Image 1 (tube, rainbow, N blue to C red):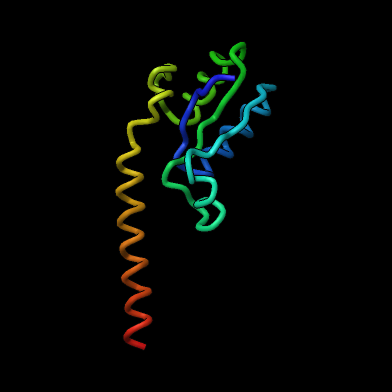
Image 2 (tube, one colour):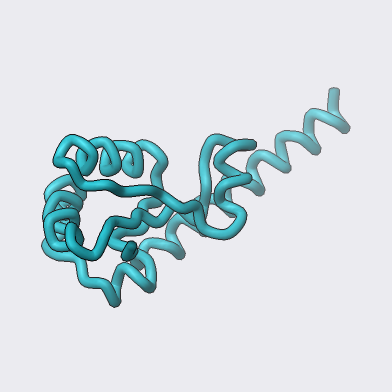
Length: 111
């Protein structure tokens, strides 16, 4: 099995997996690091999930994923490194965490 894509959204991940399944391409997702725990507890993961397919179906899977995501082409080297939007996801998650913590502190001390 080879990694073909890193998805930052659980909705996108599920859409890709469903589309691959409809096209008879076996695939699975693997959460990155603690992303699986975060997805269970918060409903989202800042690390995203990697999508894997068999080596034989790789080209076909990359074409389908490119059609879904609007990417021109996917290469294994870029897939191994992630999507390039990792810093945006991490920044967004950090800002959201600060906002949530500020809300909790405000609720605890000012109610």
